[in-house]
Length: 134
Image (cartoon, rainbow, N blue to C red):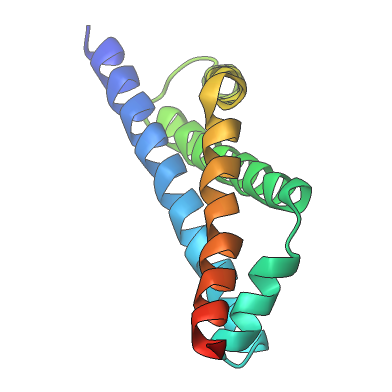
């Protein structure tokens, strides 16, 4: 019974770690890009105007895979510390299960939502530039 409770806690921690690592990766990569662009808002606008949807998709998927891998690795160490038999196999199942669930959500509505929201950014930038030029 206690092993089941530990497993449930590890799964919950893995999910939260995955989301946390994804958010931190996203923010860190934007900080690095901002530093490269010298935190100039006009350069940021140009960057978003030239960023392709395909590249954005690859970026989001890469961040997810890295986050899922790191959180699964930490799950392995937690399970191993709790003396679970087959802790590496359980961690691999958590990793693969997370990928399957996320890919189903991604293909169902996640990708469309991301692209829809991303398309609003260039429109907003162009409207802003148009109003500044008037």
